[in-house]
Length: 415
Image (tube, rainbow, N blue to C red):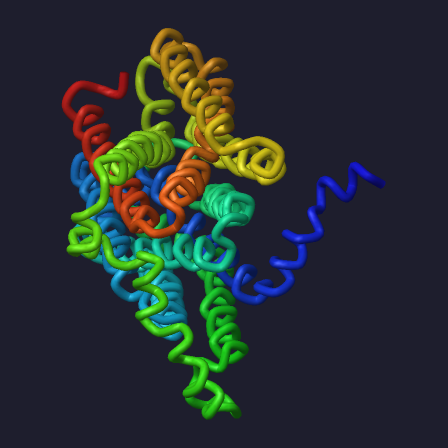
């Protein structure tokens, strides 16, 4: 009995029940975010055939998505002035993502595909920033556990995405001239992914109605009285604004440790999120190329294994973040990531170790970002712009490292 009470802290459970509608909506939004993150990886070669382009040209599709994800992450901080503007931004972003996945099978040119993924990337960036900011605002000192759950749903969505895309993968390398059959099958295959995304905008709309943020709500007078309490003055007092607001005069007067914490935290998530993005994006391409030469279906499992291990890691860290302090968990994660990366470099010709390393890397790297975010915000007493800075740095890492890895694979080979 005592153990069960320790696992389910009554205080945390009470806080969660108070904010359950908002929290559950943000978690569902991040599930759709995860679906979008992992889509390009296992389908990159098939999309290359659909657009009749080279691997280097397809790499620019990754770049366009990540560039606009970075832009969206910065804009998310600017849009997050009130709860109304935040929910409107989330609703429009999730709707855009659903529409983008409806038109991907119709993109027969790499430029059109790049534009579509850029739109999705911008929406994903807005979702990333606003979701993290809102949870930090809601729970503050207790935010570590709920951030772990938030990013668990990202991993869950990313885990499901390659499984949904699996019928879209050809067993052998496709023929560029025979892409009509593949495109017609992709239309039906992506319909499942699109249908799984459509309920998310509806969930955000329901939350807006619950919070009386819609003009059709029956209690418009309550909205007028309620809005000033969540006005920009309250938000700015907590410092959760756009990334450029970090240059405001009140921030310039901060001690050197303030900037060191932001730089250190930003650097760590830049590297780790860059590893996640580039590994998920190109492990499939690496596996089907010399010296490994795996079958396309087997190589497609690597993406699912990677995201499954990330999801399992984040699920376990929900409990561990309650039991152990963030610095301890962060240290274990970073040491594990470094060791696994070194072993992957040593055993780069082993198919078996690629599967083992993929699993262990996912477990170790899974909770670096939520742990780093919770630690930084806690050390700064929730008065800095850490959330927007870390989200933007993570997006920049995903963008630049994916571009770097794709360019190296094209010019020097996958190994």
